[in-house]
Image (cartoon, rainbow, N blue to C red; front, top):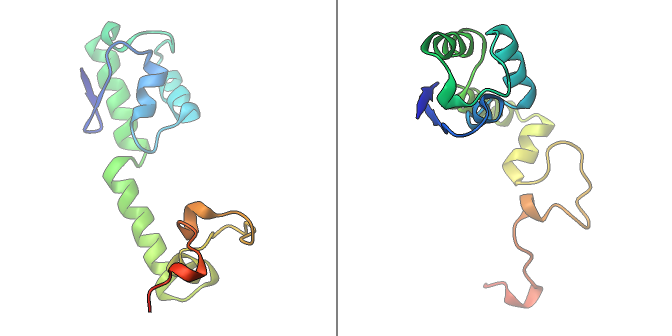
Length: 122
């Protein structure tokens, strides 16, 4: 298995798909990385040469925020919003949708499981 950005990427997949296993890299970013590294998107990870792999690693390290650093940055941004009591911060605190979605019928993902009034403990 090849290791890029502290993540083992699968050998038997195409490089463009395998790079999406890294948090912070999606389809578009993977295509841009491979274009900049001049690697064909249909190449399998196991067929990459060491120079191609090192150029992909260098591009990701120098130009992208991935994995732990990305998670930390998101966490600090959300905590900053909570501290300054912005509207989005209050929504994060309450566990409600942050980006303007309707809440009367949907948003079970954010609000949690629906409980009936009779099942509430006092």
